[in-house]
Image (tube, rainbow, N blue to C red):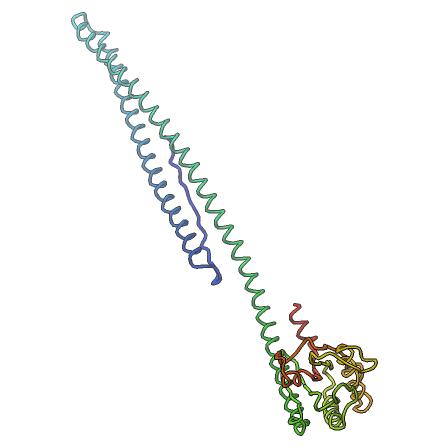
Length: 333
C-alpha cells in the first residue's frame, strides 16, 4: 500500500521597515497569502488521492479473495460426478467471467493508480517550485531589510551631521550678528557719510562710499575716511578668526586725465590696495588676513544710469568672512 506524501511548507514571517512603501509590503504579503492558500489546497488533494488509492487496493484484495474462492469451488466440482458437468461448465464460465472482470478491474485500477501517481509527482514539482519562489521572496525581503537597516543607520549619521551643521551655522550667525552690532557701535558716527553694514550669505559687508573715503578720481584716503578705517581696524583686531577681503568698485564713467590710472580697473584696485595699506600700516591689522580685489564698474548696487545711482556704485566694500573649515569638514562627510 502506497503511503501518502506529507508536504510541509515553512514560511518565515518577515517585517518591512517603516521606510518601505506600504503598497510594496501589501503586495508581497498578498502574494505570500495566495501561495499559502494554494499549498493548503494541494495538501487536501494529496490526502484525497491517498484515500482513493487505499480504496482501490482494498477493491483489488476483495476481487483476489473472490477469485481464490471460485478456484477452490472449481476444484471441488471437478471431483464430482458427471451429473454435475453442466454445473461445472457453468461455473467454469462464471469463473472465466470473474477472471475477465478481475483482469479488467486490475488493469483499470493500475492505470488509475499510475495516473494518480503522475498527478502527485506533478503536484510535488509544483509545490517545490512554489516553495522555491517563496524562499526567493524571503531572501529578497531579508536583503531589502538589511539594505534598509544600512540606509537607516546612514540616515541617523547624516541627521547627526546635519544637526551639528545647523548648530554650527546658528553659532556662526550669532557670531556674525554680534560682529555686526559691534561694527555698528564702532562706526555709528559714519552712517550718515555713506557707510552701511549688512550680512549677506554668511558674510559681513562693510560698505564705504567714495564720499567718505576718496575724492573724485583720487586714490588718497580722506581724513574722515581714515577715522572710519581706524575704528574698523580696532574691531578687526579683536576678531582674529575673520578673513578680510577689500573690494574696490567704480561707476561706469570712463577715466579721463588721471595720469598712470588707465581705466576703472586700475582705479578700483588702487583704492582697494590703499585701504588695505592704511588698515595694515596704521590700523595694525595682520596683512596675512587681507586680500585686495578690484571689481571695476561691473558689480553695481544700483543699475540705473543716474547721478544718484552712480554715486552708490562708487564704493569700497570690506567683506569679513568667518573661517568655515569646520563647516566644510562636516559637509565633506
